[in-house]
Amino acid sequence: MFEPVKTPQISQIEVLASGLDSPRKLSFGPDGALYVAEAGRGGTGASIPSPSIPGAFLSYGATSAITRIQNGNVKRVVTGLPSVALPDGSDASGVHDIEFDAYGNAYAIVGLASNPANRDTLLQVPDFSHLIAIDNFDGGASWTRLRDFGVYEQNNNPDGQDVITNLFDLLIEDNTAYVVDAGANDLLSVRAFGGELTLETVFPSSTAIDPLTGESVVIQPVPTSVAVGPDGALYVGQLTGFPFQTETAKVYRINAEGKPEVYADGFTHIVDLAFDKSGGLYVLEYDADGLLNGSDAGALIYVSPDGKTRTIADDELTNPTGLEIGADGDIYISNKGFVAGQGEVLRLSLEKDTTEGCAALYDRVRHNTTTLAANSDRADVYYSVVPNSTADRLPIAVTSGWDFTG
Ligand SMILES: [Ca+2]
Ligand SMILES: [Ca+2]
Ligand SMILES: [Ca+2]
Figure (cartoon, rainbow, N blue to C red):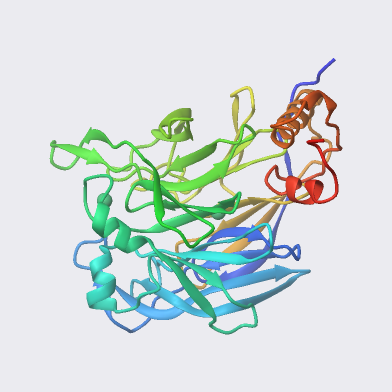
């Protein structure tokens, strides 16, 4: 008899790193260390207009970084990456995410939150709005620009609205890099990191009445996060733009036709997503009572595979900006992600009796088996489920030694 999937319970919260400059998304490397992107604190260089504060400017400095957390040691292992921020170091754009491919190579995305023309004419720092390869982690500034997503927005403007780009989440799956552009309101991909950009989907805007003017305004969707679901589809969460209504942010599932369908609804300012091994979805909210309302508390909400939602952390989080699940199911969160010098990485440990139920385990075996044996008889294929394995990595290891087709 199958047991229901249990809702995770937090047993402990630890601060693994503090004093960070606007920490954003995080990823585990092939070495088991946790890597976090710091957007930096800007600097005293050239300026571009703030997209959110009229009359304010964001100024450039080479203060964005990638920081490694390993066995209690916290170290900036890539420095000198580009950053723009307000004079106090807040509202930064810089490196927003780092991910590793199946071979252990590291890639990152650099945001901007501006018209890409401002990058070229005002900042004159070409690395913004790029997918980059990290060349080494020796503490220096060593990376290679791979693809320019800013020029893609400039040339194509897929949402037909403002020309603006702010790369915010990176996902590497099956040798393809998927990039969420929170400014352009779209999801793009590049195969093997060298080819042409592909537009995966554009997210729909909606309308609301501006509380200040009484006029109808377009609400920007502002996608911020992408994750692969247990069904192999991509799921995308949205922040939603002005007037920053509460409980209107959606998690979209990108269907077989490349169209976003609503998977879960009623969230406030989603900033990141992650699935656990039982197919449950963690949704991280940047500001749970709305950006225009008093508290800066975030929230972590768990959506069970059966669709039930439950808040599992809230006031413990302050403007969180990144979410990652460890191999043991523990939850890692970038916290205080909006300010320079105060950012943290938290570990939320789970009660260890929340093992996945039989039904979820069965579904996972069936999914991976189908993936492996697409051109064979799946009834003949058996292998054990490896904790934290992904369907895109297994065939490389398995097919090198075994022949499923013969
Ligand atoms: Ca646009
Ligand atoms: Ca990511
Ligand atoms: Ca608030």
